[in-house]
Length: 511
Ligand code: MSP
Image (tube, rainbow, N blue to C red; front, side, top):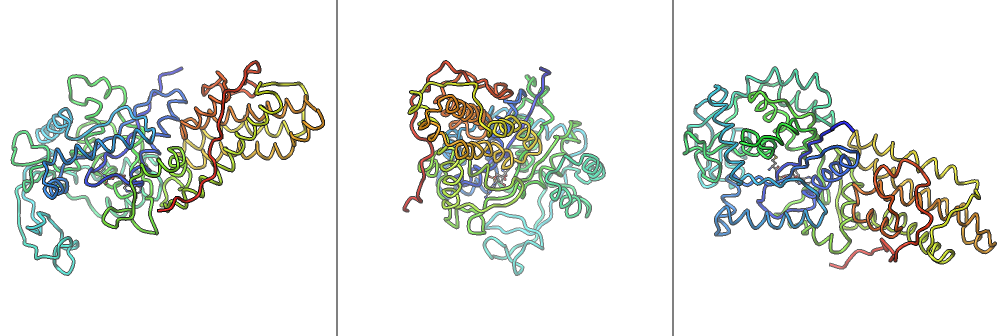
């Protein structure tokens, strides 16, 4: 096979509060995409991590009476545990407090300064002293600080600027000539019309009013602006400008940056301009997904409307949570999250469709053939329709995944399970058993087991534990992605493994 590579990233998260289900959304989607590409034979690199600098973190640490490093270390340890529990199979977790990242950011800053794309100037703005924040006229509320409501003062601060304006024309041209660069397309129009066309101003890329950041190597009263620091993670993680840049040479440019809609702006304006200034190729695609919302509003610590996602995993299982995140919301749109919606999804699709099918089929095999997988030449009039659907699914799933239509991809796999349940109703195996029509009964059970095997393999990128468990129960060795190309690969000289019912129906747990 030709050597195809695929580099996919999530945003790196601010550890300014514990992670919620909205954060899990991006990461689970990226994980499913990465796993899927791996299955398709790509050499995949999947990067996630944390964005740990800035005034916000400095203040949180101060409130908690710990150092910023101690503050972030605790949240990151928790986050890594959450990703583990969610079966996130990343290649690397980058922290912007890692030494190699700090060094690379300093080198990037210096390189752009030497080139003349970063210059020293004066930042003028309205300043709120207690909040240590700069504001623009339009951000003020009744002329006062929007955060604390106090007076603001006009101040000016020495700062470094990046010549963003220099890249405006090249950026517009790139976006216009690469329609796949910003997806979904509505976000592309928003970027061009609302942000770029009105005119890009040079960007202030250093601060002197707080210290929790990466010092500018040649002027260390300045720390690097947190977005320049954060965005650089996508290349510092690969060893850009380091002694060993093998990964960088292999994987850059990124194939896909998945980001939430509110940060598409940074990824499609600042990031490509920085890359152009560094003479590097641009990422192939930035996909801006929507938000998970609760009761129509933001998920937020201050609103107290979220639980630690590990609670849901504990109560409903990891694949119930992954399934909800991957299936419920069209990728790109906003969608509601509630425990009730999660349970509804679980009951209709996981319990009634897959669980019911697998449990019924394995029970029938145990009852009628002592758990031995058997086959015969007999046919029923419903076989060909079932087989046609099962064998055409892989192509459909791949085509949906190429467009990042994750819920549609997942649903087409579930179409196999729904079709199997219908096949059971059509062929009525219990009547065949009564009639002692063993040959037809063998065919029916074989077709069901074979369809389940293929469906389970296709599920692997989305619900890895469920996929593995079903394949373990079937006791088959035909478990690779390529083993889904032909119907009839399931061995007949095997006995199924012990099984316990999967996905039993659930009720909402009492608070
Ligand atoms: N640190 C920046 C990203 C830097 S990338 C170079 C950041 N961090 S964040 O923690 O605030 O958000 C991380 C990601 O989580 C963003 O893509 C954001 O959109 C996503 N989400 C945060 N809340 C979310 C929901 N409620 N729903 C879906 N995604 C959400 O931004």
